[in-house]
Structures are given as C-alpha cells and as structure tokens.
Amino acid sequence: MSQATLYRAVEQRRFYTTTPRGKSIGRLFPAWQFVEPVPELIGSVLERLSALPSSQVHAFWITRADELNELSPAEVLAGKPFDTSSSLHPTQQYLLAQPVRVRQQKVDEFAEQQSVGKAGIIS
Image (cartoon, rainbow, N blue to C red; front, side, top):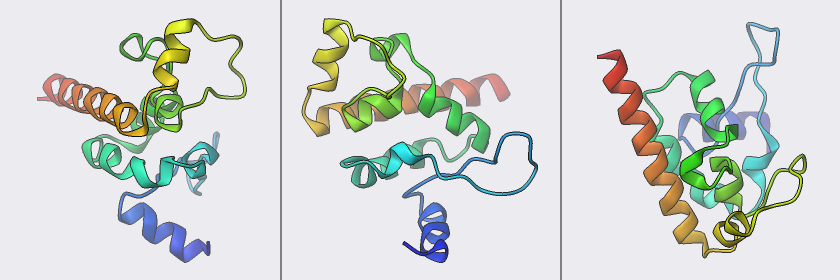
C-alpha cells in the first residue's frame, strides 16, 4: 500500500495512526490493525470512537479491559493475543476463539460504552 493510500484509509476510518513517542508530528500505523481479519472489522469501531482524541483511540485499542476478560480490544478483534502476552486464562481463550462477528460485536459495544462514557464526562 502506498503512503497516500494509507492516509486515505485513515481519513475513511479504515485504519488509525498514532504520533511517534516523544514527537509532535509524524504518523505510525500500529501493525496489529493489518492482521486478518482486522482490516475488514476495524471501521465500525473507529466510527464509534471518532469523537475521541487520537491518543485516546490508541489507548482504547491497546489497554486491557475487565469487560473483555482482561484482553485489549485489539486482541479481541484480531482473535489472538499480543506477542507480549504470557499464558491465557481459559475465559480469554474462549473469547478469542469466538466467531469473528461475535468478537466484533463485543468490541463495538465496548467502544460505544467508552465513547458515551467519555462524552458524558466532557459534557
């Protein structure tokens, strides 16, 4: 994919970027979002998170949550743990083994909850 194609995909909420640590400009594309089946699933979640600042969007994706059995939304959407994860609890394995659409729905619902929660705090 060319850089222009990637940037268009970000504008269309098909991928997201972060700013490199310690920098005020530049874009990094977290690699997990390119792992199948994530590219076809991420758009609906990014749409729900569109009102949040980009730093909160990235934190949403990589932070483990009680609501997702102590997995991050990125792990649930991809159906696999991050390489840095140690052993998984059976409940985590069960969630990651669910069909793609079930995992996407769980992440969509969690994103909606997070988005509404943040908006309620800001208002």
